Structures are given as C-alpha cells and as structure tokens.
Image (tube, rainbow, N blue to C red; front, top):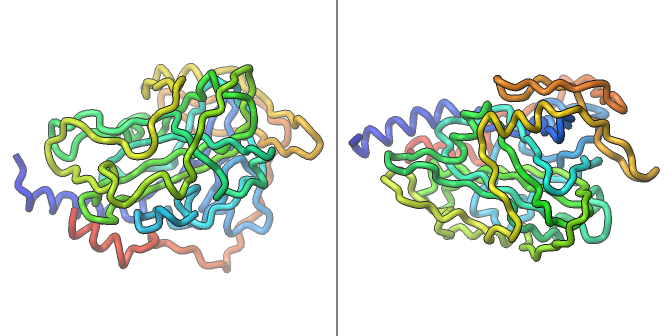
Length: 334
C-alpha cells in the first residue's frame, strides 16, 4: 500500500497540473437537439452574447464555491450567477445529456442533480434565493477498495466528460431550474476543503405528471461539516454519504455508459419552437461535442445563434478563486 508521503506527493502533482483545468458545461442535448451552455471563455467578453438556457456566472477561471460560502447565494448556481435568458423544453421521463468541456482526474467526488420549480412562472426572472431544490439523481463512490477510490466524477471522465440525467416521469409540467453539480473531494479531509461546481439551466417540463416535491433553499443544501462534505478520500472506503436531501420518489438512476448516451444523442433532432410571444426558447445549436463513440447529428435550427467577437482589451482572469488561499493548500495537502 502506498505510504502517506507518496500519496501526498502524487496528489500534489495531480492537483498542480489541474489548477487551470476545472471544467464547465459547454452544451446539453435533449432528444438529439444540442443546446449551448454558458461559454465562460467568450460570453463575458462579448458585447452581445446569445441568449442561452444556461445561467451566467462569474467563474471565468473555472473556479469553485467552497463550504465557507454554503450560506451564500453563490452556492445556488455558481458565483454571482444570473438567470438564463432562455429555456429548453423537455418531456417528463426524457433524458438530458450534459457535456462538460473537461474535468481533472484528481478531483474525485459525487455528481448530483436537482430541480427547483419556478412557482411564479418564468425561470428567466425568478429570484434564485426563492428556489427550493429537490434531488432527482445522485452518484458517489463507485469502488473504494483502493484509495482514493473510483467516483462518479471518474465515470464522467470515462464517458468523455459527459453525464446523463433523467427527468422523473411523475414531475408536474412547468418551468424549472435544473441544478447539475460536481463536488470535488481531493481536499475534503480539511474543513472547508471541498470544492462545489454547480451549473444551472432553465427547462420547461411537459407531460401529465402531478408530483410537485418539496424542496430546500439552495443556501440550505449543505453545511461545511456534513459527512459527505468534510470527507477524507485517501483511505479504503466501504461507503460514502452523498450530501444533500434524499432523492425524491420517482427518481430513476441512469446507467452512465455509452449505450445510455446513444439513445438520446442519436435521436431525431428537434427544433425549439416558442410557446408564446413573450417567451424565449433556446434554439438548438450544431455541435460535435458528444462522446467520442457517439457524435450527435443536428439539423438546421429554428434560429441561428450569433455570437459577437470577443472584446480583446478586457482582462480574462486565469486563476481559480481562492488560489492563494485554497489551492496552495490543496497542492500541499493532497
């Protein structure tokens, strides 16, 4: 078994190599139609970024939200997140295929998915602090026989940085915020060492379901001392307590394999159609971002998305929030 010193050295090297490699969702696919995510590499520097179904955020360095900010609205949809200007339509029971641009191998941890109903209508204008999230999917430790273990995040990497989410078939139709999150535990043994990477999207759920599960405010999902937040992964593990509320009734786990992705990513492409004159629906965009074995083929979209040229004279932060305060410790501690 590797010594503590060797494990620490390995983790430090891996952590240093991945400082700038934290990811974000670049697109998501519903029944073959691909919708653009919030592009932190260009949208913040664009004079007229397109309206997309992904919430904006100020994590232009692919940074994280730490446990010390769990009571801060930043934990809801990431740092200074603002409402998406559009939404995508999905039927209850359908799957959403989420594609990250990258994810560092050293950042092991769970993948968790939530929904929050926008009770007063549009999620494009909802107050994020009023949203009450209920958990629809979770995956944590896959194999803990050898430290640091195999985790849901490792499955995501194996699947070409992608994840499949199923909207429960019993969910009542309406407007929802989908909250998709990876929690990195490579420094989770330390107080405030975990790193949360939440991503939010506006969706309109259709169907005949009736369930309206009770939820929890985003600022009450976790505490810094939760068992699954302050958690040391550098040991043999038999189990892992996934943090947050329990799964709702009707939640269905999705096998995170190529076969499950094929069924959605190769489906006939749909075209988003506005449901009302005052409603903005995100238009599918062409992409080649599907997992290597499966490339979604998208046809002509309802309205081409135009992105203006980035403004070159604006500064682009490259460091992860709290690098001086947090990542130096990560590298030394891991």
